[in-house]
Image 1 (tube, rainbow, N blue to C red):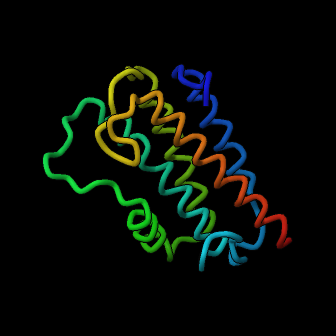
Image 2 (cartoon, rainbow, N blue to C red; image 1 turned 90 degrees about the horizontal axis):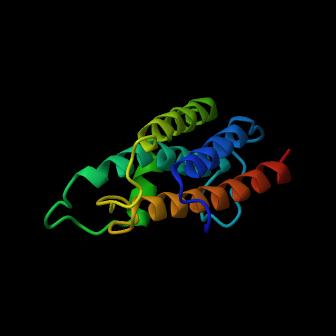
Length: 153
């Protein structure tokens, strides 16, 4: 994601993502193609839980890594976050995505993008790099989500 390492560019990217997510609609119970056993709503839960966690990743630049912490296990994290959101409806997940974006944008405002993150999927990456990687990750899932919703009107 070359070129998306300034705070304002990252903020704009996440705000754009949130505006697209906010407009999603369709059959949330449809299968999410390429996501074994996941419905479209499960994929939305993954997107919203990730977005909700990103402000914490930003804040980790001010914290030391936890000694002896387990390495990030994306599969375990994803399963637990989807399971925790199983009883939420799509609107609650859309709201969570939106509030996560708001908190992230606020947190990025005065953050030093050159400092290293100590938690999440990209520990040791500079904050700018980690947020650009996560923005790309979110965009790819959003593309899959939109495709799944459009294939099941």
